[in-house]
Image (cartoon, rainbow, N blue to C red; front, side, top):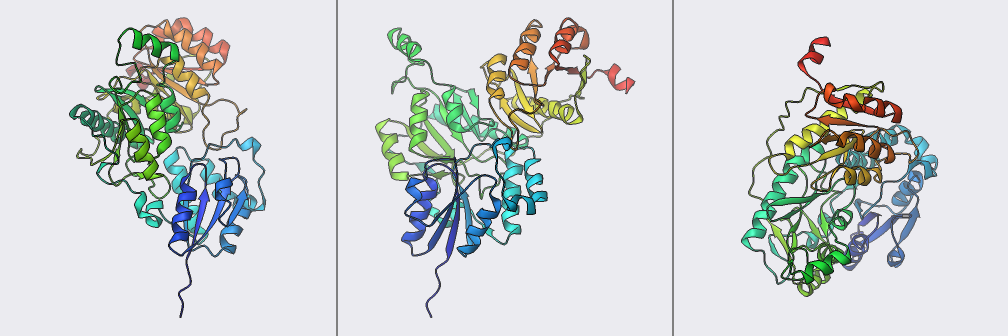
Length: 445
């Protein structure tokens, strides 16, 4: 009796991974059915395979396509953007699954969102598996993928990067970081890795000046590049749908950012288009390696912070108060490894952490990011938690927060008297202004 081929369902976002997995499955003699999320990428290269296109809110159509294809295993792969719920056009499947949909959208960060998505598909009878379960060759093992090798200094930077991801993991942030010469240069927030790397790209005129002045650190030459892109899963990350990934495009972005190479956790990341990735790395004279992590578990953050108190007429919601404390705890967890100017958090999800970019750049970046399920025109709810060097920064930060639709700022290390000159400004802008609680505040409560 001939064994019936199994059918692998692929819920596909952008990128080459859905096509790569589909080609692998069909080459081994099994079947696939791809459900492509409309607007997340050019899916013309998926057309040789059985394909259904759905909108973000067409849950009923998505489930019918998978069931009609008799899918036995399901992989969820490819990059996606956070949708604006105001632009969604739901089908009847959203109505019939409304409790589950609301639970997903009300969840705070990426880890919780993705875990709930997995549980949703499992509740519908599908077995959700990791891409490496379907295509084991995607896994990055220990060792180089190309000809180049890391130096001892690179390995020290990688170890520091692993430490930072572990430390920030409990706060659902930091799957990727950039480390250069023992310094944290960037931390990935709610944006993707490419967007984080783009922050490090210097304008052409600065590059030209660097080369002409002999400043090798800033020049995007082979000998002048410094720093490593480090990617690894966060502790307790949902590995079936959120494995860190690298590919040929990663090499291009790392080269543009002036870095020496890429390191990922061995057996904790996947490589897309591996042959092309290795070829691109060799041409760029860039190392790409899987690295074992010999570090221990991150210590629990002991912030010593007793919360925040409002000093103006606008009071924070209970969620905003909890958010401010969570962001402050994250900054405390980061403190042994890097100095940060602050973080922006919204509904339990840390959108961005600054490392050397400055408060105003942090607010501007966070203002462009959207939380899951967030309406673009909704009343702002995000809070910026910041540490200031000089008190006159508070006034500029309030103006910057208002311009970037941030609901307020929480200032670390100051008391109500310190920010008194700025209370009227916060009130006039409609912003929440918070300072750390003191013993007096605790007693009054």
